[in-house]
Length: 344
Image 1 (cartoon, rainbow, N blue to C red):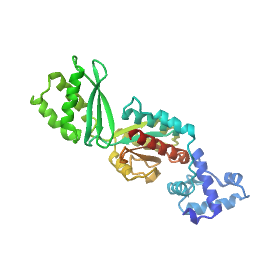
Image 2: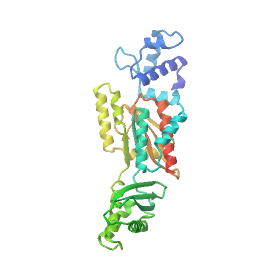
Image 3: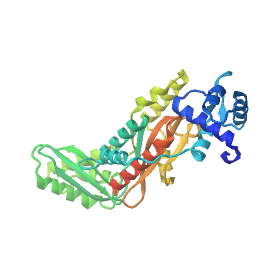
Image 4: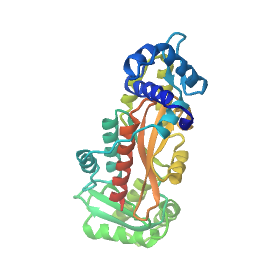
């Protein structure tokens, strides 16, 4: 549709959209006449605005007000007129430093990534990772002291995750090794969900050749992982940024529904399926969104992959439709690539 507009129409349309993304306010013909070069009169601009409104690209929020872009208009702008900026070297270094994985679990890395995106974009940061139901390559208990151990799990696709478990008094390094060997013999090549019930039954019936303390550690490790492996993981940071752009009560109700959907992890399966279909940044504007009751907001997300180039999750931001797409898109894209490198 952009190609069908003449230069004057594109110029006026671009100024209206850019002004909306900067201020969130309607733009009138008199204001545009003062800003545009070429000496266009307010009457000429009104005629062009009327044509753009008839084409479904603009609308008037009030009878005597200026114009705002529709969701279709924003989509046309993003696809055809948006100039996407490049991240500066210091911005890339900031992202790499903030998302560094040394000494942190995958969950901690993803949480920090959402906080960083939220702060840089002034939107809510969001990351989704799939449930841990893939076949395992290795599991190990690593002692952290007399009362705690780290359970490290490596899946066949190269994903590494860990959890801290509490140890019963009297545990030593050889018992942790025995617990690791016991679980590796039963879990390698299988998912935790598939093997947990069988292992727990074996422990209850005392068929396992484990002493009581080691059996308790095995049970604790399975419980820690099974409890978090039944559903995709959703991490959201910076929801308060969504409250700063509200103008009417309807906006507040929309954000309330969004918070409710995020809290209940609604539509995560669809979001993960969307990630599996994506090859780069995906942008959903306003009424295009079918997830999280997001009408009136924009979702900008990018998938991240593991060491085998298999997409395992997605990260991005949720914000108002007037979000600074040109700045946020490369930010989300680069963060997803950094996470993918870390997972590899």
